[in-house]
Length: 70
Image (tube, rainbow, N blue to C red; front, side, top):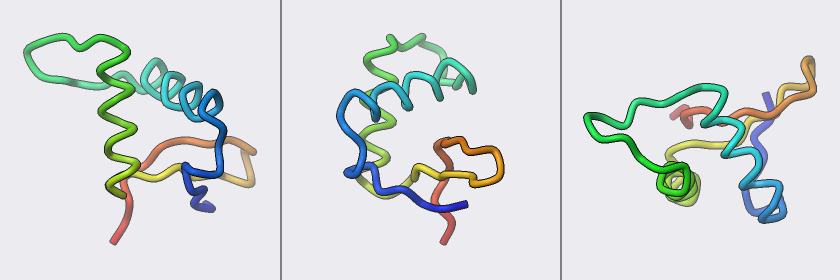
């Protein structure tokens, strides 16, 4: 997989990727349900902090969001 810096994506492309990831993966946000906007904000913050990254898989020609490996 190739790491894609989130800064290289347009705002629309980045938001689309994040929203698609949320809808595809489903995520557990604890006892309280979060709005899509809150989930997007959380993932964007994690991208900016470097906790997660955008990974491009050449074989499937697709992107996903994954935990950054040390």
